[in-house]
Image (spheres, rainbow, N blue to C red):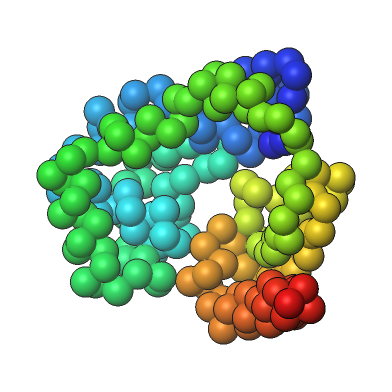
Length: 192
């Protein structure tokens, strides 16, 4: 969300306009890091975050509610990460836990205070925004009106979920390449 003059708590935002951010309340609560502690639980949790599901389509994550613990043992391998990549993340989280990562969801008030210090609310450099059309949290309606915050915004869409760079790498990288060639590099050449 763009910086605002008045603080809106996460609970109020979920209750009024962003029900799909309910998972953030759960991740901030401290419950998740208390329940998901073993190496296998961490593996299942990460598999679910990166697109893994159970044999009957079970999911571990509800945007509105958070983690569905009873499905943890049913989750299969992520289709997005290699076994080597997953092993790396599992080992890191097994050694360090989930707490530090989940702290991000506890910083809404700090982020708000920092944003108050921004001198301007408009970004003056060229920006590429790639909307993942199937993202169940960062839904396309959240991007409506964002043009008012950017001097030069290029918008693109990709049929993918939250992990668009993994789900549609050729398409997303093509959009980035085109944008760099036309906007970033083209702009640099024209100003020489």
